Image 1 (cartoon, one colour):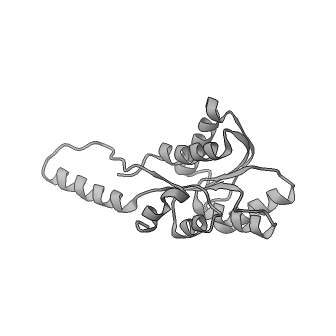
Image 2: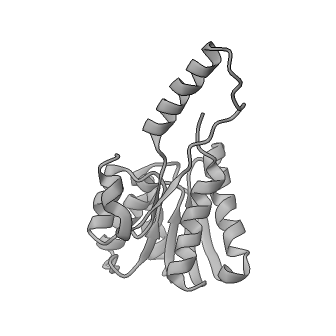
Image 3: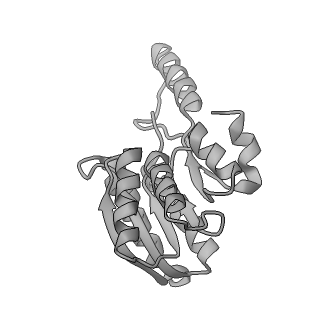
Length: 185
């Protein structure tokens, strides 16, 4: 029971590509490099920008912040101090990108105009989106996963056949549909 990680990074990267009109420079903030979700989400970003519609996008820096807000803030502070010029920030999770947004604000970057995305649709991320700072996140439905696990266990107890893997889809969260996710989280 879970969600297919290919969906999370792909949904995020496709929406970032759409917002950028298929071209621009992006910064990628990765989770822990030993974590399968971080590896897959980063791979998804690379695969999306390799498509014809997104081939004008270039990754100018890619580094881990280990799923941590403070490390995300420090990483963005370092990138900004180096004078990196970017059009978007694509993060493997919301926690790191919220730290990056904090660093951007401290440096005077207009986060309302920046294209910034993450994954998880946490309460802090949804608040950041409502404030206009975060443009994209991806919701992983833990409640549906729990229900699916119970339903699958009940089927197994009855001797019914079940799939080896049961996936609950990730869902794209953008300002246009944020209200439906504010209630779920």
